[in-house]
Every structure is written in structure tokens, then in C-alpha cells.
Length: 520
Image (tube, rainbow, N blue to C red; front, side, top):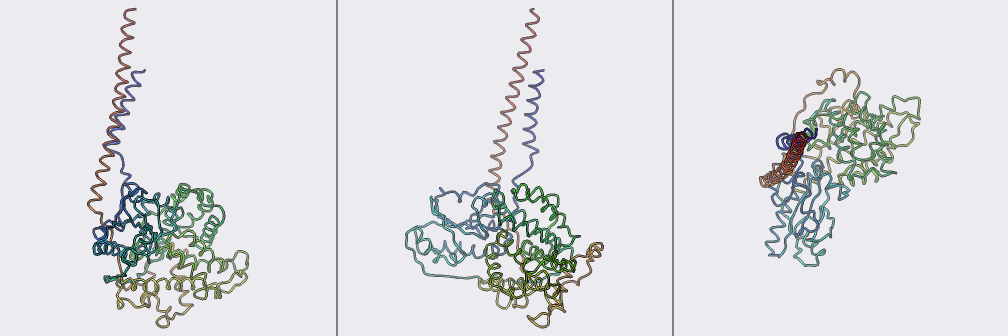
């Protein structure tokens, strides 16, 4: 029996060795499109893959001054800041050489989707977040994008932190980046799929910034209230409804931490990607998120229409607006996006305070329509503001797009929406929104009637290219994996030798007993 045990132990050791060497799955696979700065154009910005562990430049003992950007690849402001950061890194090194300064400053970046645990440990409030680390020092200063407006301006800030005086003259050079935009039409099926994917992504990446559960009180209540409103306003035939039902039924598990949330979301996960129209606007996340908000806004009107005689079951535009505002404040991790939205909402922009009401007794569809129309205006205000930002950052040429060309929907998709340039007809706009962002049973049965909308007339638009990894980084990764495999191989060889030793020892004891019994 003991001989058998020793043999089985040795057998399993050898089996584990073979599995580790030849059949172990690769858990270190990196999605390179989640990294901005791995291409040669960003060679001065240090960025490491998540499979390489915590970036060394985040360690307090790191011997150089460094600027570190924490970003998420889906964040529009991170995407806009990318070119500016690359240009700043190049200009900073040129100025240091020009001024012949005895100074070393590195620029680095951390992509917070693959480096989720690392970023969670820093308790970031949003993206992008920029921090200044002093050499071999635990002192950290948070910077803004304006602090990196030019290298000489940054040197003045650095001098204040280190006590050194540097030349603080301002120099700013810009390279014109050609870019344009257009809107593509989508089927209802694509719109609702995009919204589901963005809700799914938001739950995966934005709900938890640390391993701790959601804080009791307002933070937790805001999420539960928003999910409840989504469940009431999203069409019953939509694929998001089973997910929302489970999120609310198992809310204690959802709010307990990332693992509990993942277990609830997993059965409802869509195994697809954002539509071509959404991906043309970046990663697809923000496009799908706006789709989710527009579905909610149209669903608010539909919900109230289903409850004409019961005011207690109705929702008010003020209630819906505040729920959306609070959710964005707590759970959208794009800091600049949040600041703009909260400022415009709290300042009653687009006449919100006069258009929204908390009176549930009103039964006027004209009053209910104010919320989806206000959100439509808010969305287009964001489009116009982002265009101005691109012009100011010299990412767009002045004659590339007009303000009206970035307003949505384009006239070729909704002739009845527009009276003239910049002026729309409210009822026509609401009818178009309800056709786009609502499902009925006939549309579901007919697979959303893919021919319900005309083919779009495409206009030129920016596209984001996937990042290509630096060969040096890939070589380092291969070396590290080889070291890991070598260490694992030695471990299992050692265990196999122990198993063989036990087997030999057992065999010797068996032979001795056999010889003893023969003598007896």
C-alpha cells in the first residue's frame, strides 16, 4: 500500500510538471489596444504591460523625478490629452537640453483598465489623473492638464516643489492634426446592444475603484435608485432587463465588492462588441453610454404614458434628472466629463430649472417630453464644446467642420427635426428620438426591422488606430515569462525528485520486511 502511495505521489508530480510546461493557459495576455503609449511615437513616455506587474516608476524609491498620467483608454478626455502629453514629453526633454539643466525628468503613464488593482490602490477620483513624483521621495503632487501646457511653465511648478529656480519663459508650439467627424446611422438592435455593452463595461470598470464594498449611505443609495429607474424606463423586451432585475434582486451581493458584482453580471454578459458607428467615435463606451441615457429619457415618457390614472406610479422629470446627475457624480470616472456635466446641471443650463418639475400629478406629454429634449440639447452642447477644445488644442483645422456639422442628428437622418441651421422642431425631434431609442414587440419579432432607416451618407470622421507594442517591451515580457517558466520547472522537478525518493524509501522498507519474514 505504501509503495502504491509513493508511486502515485511521484506520478502526480510529473503530471503537474507536464501541465505547467505544456498545457498551462496564459493568464498574462495583454490587450494592446488598452494602452496609449506603447508605440514608437510615444517613446519618451514609459508604460508597462499589466502582466509585468506594478510599474517601477510608482515605487517611492525610484531615483528620478517623474510625471505619471493615470488614464482609461475609453475616456474621451484621455484620448484628447494623449497627443498633448506626447508633445509635452518631447518638448520637455528639448527644453532641458536647451537650457543645459542638470535635471532628469521622466514622463510615464498607467492604463487603469488592465492595471485595475494598481490604480485602485491610488484611490483615483477620475481620469485622466496626473501626479508628480519627486526622486527617491514619497512626496506626490497632483497636477492638472494646464500645468503641462508647456515645459517651461511646468519647470516653474517643479521649481516651487524642489526649491530650485528654472527658466519659466513660456513656449508653445503646435502641430496641426487633421481630423473630422460624422454620424452614422444605427439600427435599433445596434443602439440597444451598444447601450447594454456600455452598462456592462461601466459595471466592470467604474463601479469599484478599490476592493472595498460600496460605502453605506448616499453612494449605495444612488446606485440602487438609478438601477431601479433604469428597470422602469428600459423596454421590457430589451436584453438589459434580466440584468437589471438580477442587479436589484441581489443588490446586497452587488454592493459587497467586485467579485460579488461580477458573479451577478456574468450570466447576462454580451459576447459581442460595439457597433461600427460607436467604434468610429473612439472605444464605443461613451457612445453606448449616451445611448443608454437617451433610452432612459424616452422610456421615462413611455412609462408615464403607461400609468395615466395613477400619479403615484409616475416618475417626474426632476426625479429622473437628479438620479442621472447623482449617478454621473459617483460612478463616471472621467473627471473632466463629470465636472462639466455637474456644472451645467447645477447651473440650470438649457433652462433645466424651468423645464423640469417634481410634480407627478401632471399628465401632459408636453411636460414629460422636456426631459428627453433637454438631454438632446445637453448632448449636442458636449459635441460643440469638444469641437472647440480640439480647435484650441490644434487637433482640428478651423475649416474642417462647422459647429452645425457636429450637431446630432444630421439633417440627412431626420429632415423633419430641423427648421434651419441650429433650429429644431420639438415634436419632430421627440418623434425621431422615440423611434431611435425605443423598442416595441413588432420590432423585436422582426429583428428590429433592419431596413427601417435609410442608409447613412457618410462624412469624414476620426478613427483611432490600435497601439502597436514596442519590441523592447515585448522582449522584456518574453524574458520575464521565460524566468517564470524556468522557476516553475525547477519547482516541479524538485517535487518530482521528492516523490521518487519517497518511492525508493518505501521500496527499501518493503525489501527489508520481506527479508526479515524469510529469516523468521
